[in-house]
Image (cartoon, rainbow, N blue to C red):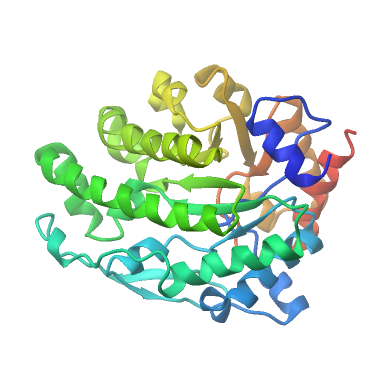
Length: 338
């Protein structure tokens, strides 16, 4: 099996020769400074240039043994397209929102209509078209912000979280608006050639918003996105949820994405209990990836594999100073089981 066949087979619940090892992109980007230095292609320029964006993700795959490519390298595309101001960061920092599009929950009229073909959204689609030509054997992952993470990039998060408790109607209106923009961006990336979608919603962790709010404001919109991409485009979805997902209990099993990705706070064995029937993804510590030694990473990868992980991956976003050798140690560990 090649890399694309293996990952898509796993997401389809089919038998494979071994688990794939991926770093999706987006919040969970695979690009590190060592990769940039080796190919002489750097952030922040690559965030706005399709050729450089494609070159960097492909180099990360080739140099570190990652079995996918994915764009973008941040979680600010949708927010910028809707009117928030974004600073593109540096060699060692990702883009971030510097000014919210809204000053209150009642200012939806301040949001810019989202155009998936304009600005950096259009750059991402063009990068995918390049990747489809240059690496047809690799799965191309379209990375999207989750609805709550996008909402909290458009308005002060404290205002949004307060609305979850005190003004549910306003919270639903903004989350609905975000969901429609995410659909549009995802559709554009799929039409450009993306093979699957990864939706990361770190602001929707149960530890931040609570189980009840997750059930009302996160789960329905996450599922709407996953169901939409599957029904309309036959494209599977991975959902990444940060934090201690044990607090969500049976809600995790209700996530309709083909696979659930978690961070290192919870073991893969626990995830399997919480979400029976779902493909599991994770959850090598990103702190260890940056600060540890290759031998430690190999052991951590083997532990995930022994717990039955379906897709081996970092637990969250990896730091830009993460050594290629540490990522390669994880990649080699999964290949050793064949």
